[in-house]
Length: 303
Image (cartoon, rainbow, N blue to C red; front, side, top):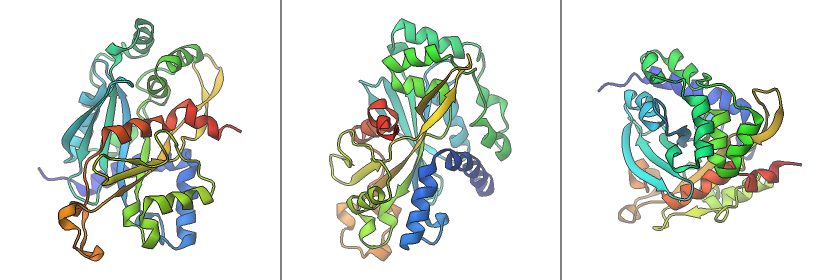
């Protein structure tokens, strides 16, 4: 299958532009990296992966959403299950190595209480066909705008808060819908000491970026080869269907260091490629990264 590179570039740009505007940490971090001489501009940042959240209901969820990226040459890889958070997830390998991986998660709606299910279906039951089937996947403008289309009406504040008590993930999706949840800076691609996540985190904290401390600031895979950290989601002013307003969690930025696989340790750094480093994801890491939008973390952003 041939992939239209220009179209995929357009889709990713359409995703990223509104996200940058909504998440001030993106510009703050980029500007500081330029000032420090780590990069010349944002085009030099290697995006490790981007992530989306979905609801496991008919005509939505991963089975619908993944069609977009499968169409653009992404390959579905390993599954993940988060029992406590009631989530399923997959990651998707890009068609070419310079594109970001995709991490797509889905709420197991049937595992929630009847009250929570009723609220979610109140907003999604009118969706009687897969909305992705209605767009021309070869039209990057249509695909790009799809991510910000209001597929269901805004919730009331009461419904949002009821969901929040049971599943902070559910509450995030019912309001934010398919908004880009985060993008990820590949720290190991940065120069010198800043290619180590510990050092990069120190740099982030020095410019006032608040980091997610769930499970520790750095979340490390069992094999020690994947290290991840993330900012705390920015607080946004949400306006609900009933006209009421409330500060809620928006999106955030993640940071990943993928270490070299043991069999390639002897290679000089200038010969290392993506294939020589730890790939995929780690459930335990991702479980705590999800909490970047949870109240225990975002309360640090409320002054």
